Image (cartoon, rainbow, N blue to C red; front, side, top):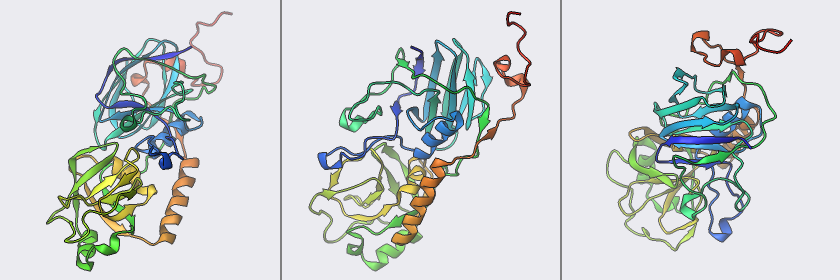
Length: 333
């Protein structure tokens, strides 16, 4: 079995997939990749079904395969090199056996993704391979780990795509929640006019936003009976700073929610780095459903195209069939 060896790794690298839907009633949120767009992009670049990927939270590491394999780099752009030569992001590449892939820090956004042909073949736990740290499923990856890879039936590399813009904050579409009307009209008006800044505090459970002015606490009803909460909910805790929940959030909570970010915009939330500006816009249920349908269609049909590369930056040049019938000249006759 082929393995991907981790030589060095950042502090927040995990194996992720689409998560574990269907367990909220048992107290387990879905989890899975913080940026599902990037997960689908990696699969598209390798022309394989969406499966597992290494989620790189702010920083990657150094990796090496014991056999030739294919890789795709998506999500938050990071500096990447193969045997010292630069690699294009948002692209698929051949990783020769023994060659060292090095991925540095994020240049924009938060979560980068390393997808390997055939996927990471860890045992499933509750129907998924993803780490859900808040629930004690899986763990952070460490130097010395050897990740088994599934069989890769594909061969094609050298593909690229145009990533969806989501790495610099922006406007988030929001649906009203059960407690939206509890907030005074002037508070709700200020909520959609204000620019919020992504705080340094945040993880796969959610991110905290700093308002420009005073907080959004309620004079009455600040604590409510604990009830079901979901990714995208915008909780208003006691300090009045909005907290947007992500896929690894808890399943119940007792803070009032001023609204809920629609699922199609959660990749933008997850990829907002500290200091990024975010704004909110309330939408109708019909608009939210239309956006969700478009988002899902987009994940199912991501356009890719050949990557034009400088031959001087291709240490694996001879592994590409540049012209039909031309080889490295080392085959037996």
